[in-house]
Image (cartoon, rainbow, N blue to C red; front, top):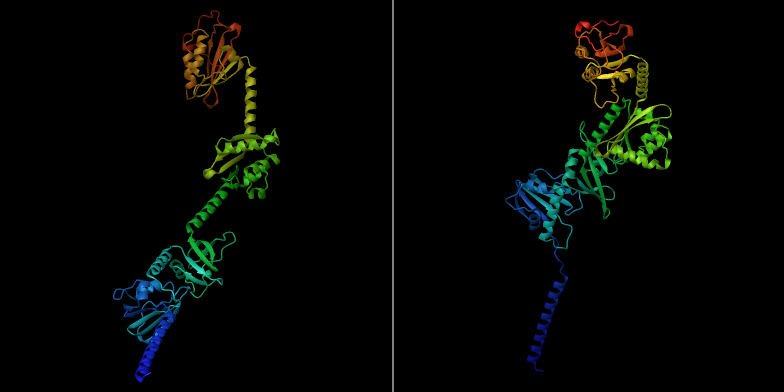
Length: 508
């Protein structure tokens, strides 16, 4: 092979080798190049005015150079960096590093300043995945929703250290002058055993504490807390307790036994008089028995009439409860020991029912004695031969004896309406001879002043002549007595009647 041919072949081989090497180097570079990390967020301020920033920072915090100030970025970062300075640093060169309170990125904030310039640098530790604008929008929406919530919310690790909280929690912490270095659980007091989901936030000296309903959720080995202010609920419960205590003190001095059952049928309130009247032990009443248990215990202690049929006892109690709920229950119990109780059932608001137990033994005894005396007096009057009729101050016939009822055919106990003095005089006039003095009797009965008794003879159409005696008695009442006239003194002419008022005679 000639020398020129050899040179051509060598030149072609060299060119091919160079091309292959270039291709391999290009391919290796394309296959080994890693995706770029997320750019760190940086902002530059001059005298508190934003003059420059990285695209990542400007997009995430929605800032624009020339329009925003130091206060804007401070408001956005204060919840994560509570020690964020209120104004940019000035003067000689310096730097400051702040750690975030939550586990979100970036975990720290670096502030560097020189003269009037101040840099904010938030290094990103999460890399690889490119964060899109849509992701920033969603994060901003979540942050706005969290920060605008009026209820405190926070998250803690397994050790109890807070890793995140919202603005409402930060405001409470600032109000309570809580130490930021302390765990978040110390902000609220430990829940009581009676209310495990209720916590108290103590305020300054002399201020009322704030109460919160606490909701706890566990997720990813973290504790998520939400607190809702329930000051109104606690105040209402306290007012209810005070009201119940006031009622209890008021009812403690009543002689009437009081038992109030709530909507569930359990005893909610009772006074000491109930213990004395029912002889039920106070521990039993304090245990809040039901209505059925209450009445069953009354039967056991013989403080209510023994039912004739014990099988129907529960049904009778159910009827008692139903009647009390409607306000229709009112009975009088006569006990074996001679006592008499008046029992009344009344409905109360919110489905409650109240029973009033009153000892009316003295009243019943007094009424019985009074009735016995009245019957005895009536029997005594009925044995007299003279007719007696008593008219009240208003002119109504109130009492008469058997002789009067037989003579004049009048009985106030059998009359549908009241018998007045005019009604009685009309009967007397119809059943006797004419007499002009009947009107004087009516005037005497209705008179309110001092009255002197008098009498007059009357001549019934049937029977012997009578002497009508009119007398004033107690309470403005008038007694009209019809006494038979002895035969020797009676007028022979029975048809003649006295015609003038001078025929009145003083009572004998």
